[in-house]
Image 1 (cartoon, helix red, strand yellow):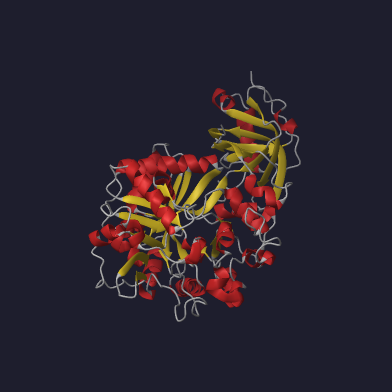
Image 2 (tube, helix red, strand yellow):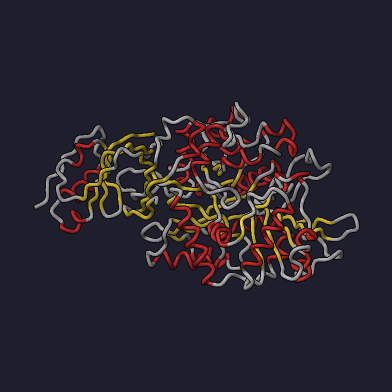
Length: 563
């Protein structure tokens, strides 16, 4: 016999809440058997008005939230499974609003050069890796950052050739906008002194005009086009590795910035079979040859909100670290150089027209102030000619913006999709690249939030580590994990912990048109949440990055348990 549900809560009982409560309090054997109550928790969530709410009990049925409130909610749910949260802090599942899922997976399966301290050390680690994997035809890796090495100079093919001359090597820079090749890889790609840099790319050369082994932005395609495409088995392994890693960090949903047609089909098939282990919001790569057919099929979302494809990713420029970000004025540390424009105006307008016509959001990679202005100009042109304001277009990174362009984000309803750890990673070189004056519009989270823009935060994994608590720490403190600089870097642009968490939850969901089903724990939304080892609203900002995830739940199911 099922118990009668008694609700003692300060919440107004909306029609949907009354309906959902009725489902539980009824005598349906199916519903009572699927009801879970987690109580004795320190819960935080954002409601549909983006307001922070607290609760100690969460009721879940059939994978969705029924109600949250105090312990009295569950008094009469005698047939429900009762879980004691043991006082742990519970948050909505984290949404990373900008990552690269397959790249993360491949990176986890390849050599990681993030912690290398010099080109010579990196080469030695690569040689050891190659020796351990003689079956690999190509040696691949990612994560090197010459800015952190002595002299801050780009490495050369020669350094790799001295240790591994007979197998091709291709190593992407940490930001994914430059690559380091050995001579074998250059030869296979046909790159020599006579090779012309492609539009939007650069082949770095020595004083004799010979390629050094460093390729910037679109020039990377010369190497990538000769690397065999991943097999379906490799893609599956990459997705599994990425999924397990993200779930362990409390990320239940991510926006995948640059999905190929092959990946789109693979993810969609898994979602239809209910075998996709993490929620994915797909931005289809604008350069994929099958973009037209994907747009013609229209936006995609499965019944369980596991996979959604209704966005197109397009690039205006490159990255700041490799001096590929497009600037209105030359780089402070490279005379006459203004970065790289990766997509022509004609191409941009065609992409906007096709995407908006098909009902797809446009997600525009823009890092430099010129790249951001071009993106804003194209959004404004689209509104004036074909419409599409309701599609919630996004500027991915919004990293260096001219002060006069920041208000245009709000005026045009463009979402700044930003990555807090970029600021703390770049603070050692950003002023060298930009000078002090341009920093006033760089990594300007506070300025965006204060003007009413909804900030969607992510990590840009695997360029940065995916850990969202590193992002929260950077957003709140603007410090390294060694608490430097003491007052924070450009501290006036920091966020409160509430604002930062909002940008990783309900506002990130908004950026994907998913705020009615994800991003919070309101009645009717999917029960995606995490349990963590400390109250992030009570610890000091300096301690935020140390937060550990104890459990991750998706649709009311435990999918990760900390060992």
